[in-house]
Image (tube, rainbow, N blue to C red; front, side, top):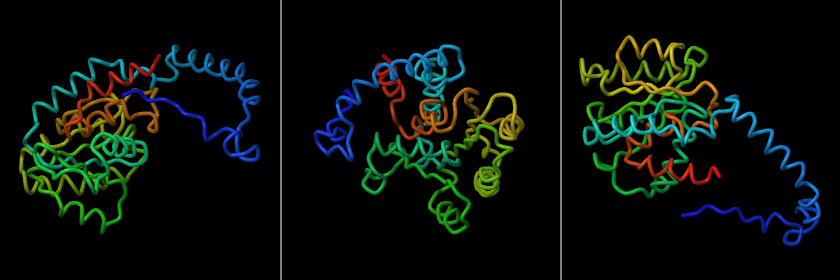
Length: 238
């Protein structure tokens, strides 16, 4: 499937001059747009901006696929703890690949459901936790630099307490950390508890991170073919 941009309904020819863009305005802006594109390409090539390179990180993609395959079938829910860019991309990707949550097929170990805990409302958290069996749940904690955001910390503490009580010493095998490499509270905790860990590039912001481990780990765990997904990303990079 190819993604194409159709500007028809943005044009003044369609919606009127007060609300649309004229063809003359488009023509006069081409030089400015080309200059902006070249400037962005320089920032990308220098490493200042990292998200255009994410679909090409085949080593990371393969390691995520290998990990997901190693745990597949042992859970029927994936619980994502994150906020903002750490959660929104995964939600959008899951809906795009598997359909909106209310109409997705029945959930099972072959088709795990994705549960996103993106706030600390106690009623929401409590209901979500009661809906999952800790023995059949994988938890993905996402935070680039955790120490600056206490909300994922609180939710993870709640989960670790409940999970440890239900699963015991194997609780650490049910938790995946996606965070910065070598610094931050989550990185330190993951190293101490020996969580499976995947890293977020320093030059990738949260809102652009869906094709990094932030989005690919939950996607792979719920059964999305992330190799095909990122292949599409590479095809659209031209």
